[in-house]
Length: 137
Image 1 (cartoon, rainbow, N blue to C red):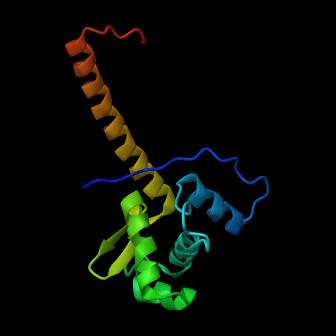
Image 2 (cartoon, rainbow, N blue to C red):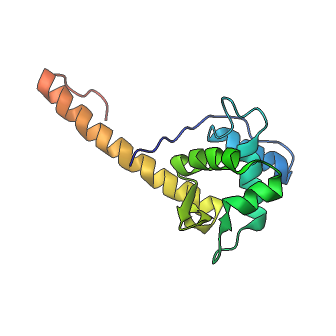
């Protein structure tokens, strides 16, 4: 499985505001970049946070109905959230990875650390093969 994790260093909101915090969270993961001019990814995340239960999850149909958005558009953005590792699908229900945003971020951090470990090992192999010495550490 291929997964792309995007991290964007954006200044956190100064004032405490749930909607602004969710926007910052999504923007920091690049979830609303590109063609998502209507911030549908952010709306889906907010809707999931308010409609999900740990046992039952939420369906894409419920999200589409709640947001008043066509199911095909919701599914498109859900694929991006799944690809990013924030959301997962089990049967017909959708869940936040780990059951919460914090747990999802922790899991995504572990994913990125595994990727960096593999990159570091391969970089060392390549450096050794071409005769480069590592000067850091």
